[in-house]
Image: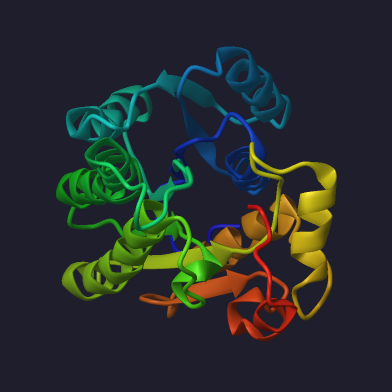
Length: 258
């Protein structure tokens, strides 16, 4: 897979025990990366994913860390470097997605979203870039959300944190060029949230222009595309069946539970 000889074949993937993060970690392992697998609490899922990575012939180390703590985010990079001796790619996938609206947002809900969804990616990329040797290149991929292109009045703290991450992606792409590329993927309906039943999720993806869900494997392939594309930086791929265009959802005139 690696076309850039200056890119170390080690990837740190946050929130990689389950769901989208798991698929990203497995895909990168399949294409030659050793994996630093971050998780929070879901040890059995993390161990299962790690075993699949080992079965692919790649090395894997597991790290349980609470990314609400900025020091834990920084330490995660140091622990990865201690385990592998090098690091070429970071994928900031870990995220909190809880509902609040303008009249229900609290200091705690705001702070937790900002810490996990915005500050921890910043701290991870900061530590990664600082530790990168002068003769090496790096890639950072942030998993954001198509909603930064398609604002709604719901999920205030989440939306603000992901919008901040989209701005951070472009800012760091400028700040860290040419040694580190920074880009993003913006998923649409991919896996049901904890609030959704099957009917809610089916209604959500049926409302997008292409009328089909985005598979986690598609997100993983997009991450790999970014890593393999030496001219790609400061951009976000919206993999959402056209949801970011917003036309069909607005036409429904109703709110779909997410």
